[in-house]
Length: 197
Image 1 (cartoon, rainbow, N blue to C red):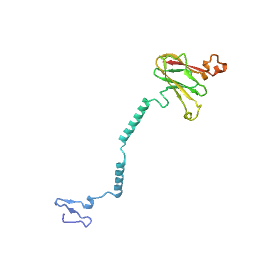
Image 2: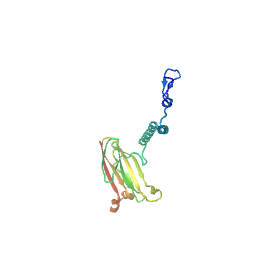
Image 3: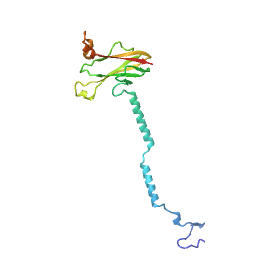
Image 4: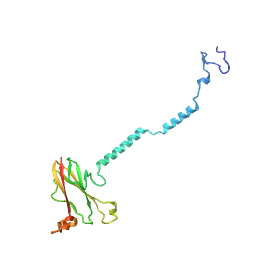
């Protein structure tokens, strides 16, 4: 049958070794459609440009953790950790050993404010003063007479009760030998009972 053929289009070719007949070359070397080739090229190019997300995510996560640890290990921009800041109407505080609380008061020395922790001093074995800081607004650098906020921060050292007394000896009136009634009314004395559990 190797010498017979079935027309020009259906011609069967004999293998060179004479062992059998093979398919026509047109059937053996069929090319993929042009659109399939184009999709494959686009996919290959996109894969080559695509970044490796795994290593990048790992680097980003490490940077975030490092920033968080740095923030935890440093004091804030306005000073040490202040813990719970008492509001203007709060006059007592209860907290656990190791926790902190802060008393904040308006302070403008240009008009006569003179704040201090007054006697009797709090029991340092229960609550100890660890920081005092005056925060001034930005305009205080260019304008005179601008007041700020003074922060007194205490840390609970041991279980028990004590009290913190803040005194504003306004214009030193509290030091006068015989202050007038008006002068005495300008002096502020606030007492804050403290319970450490």
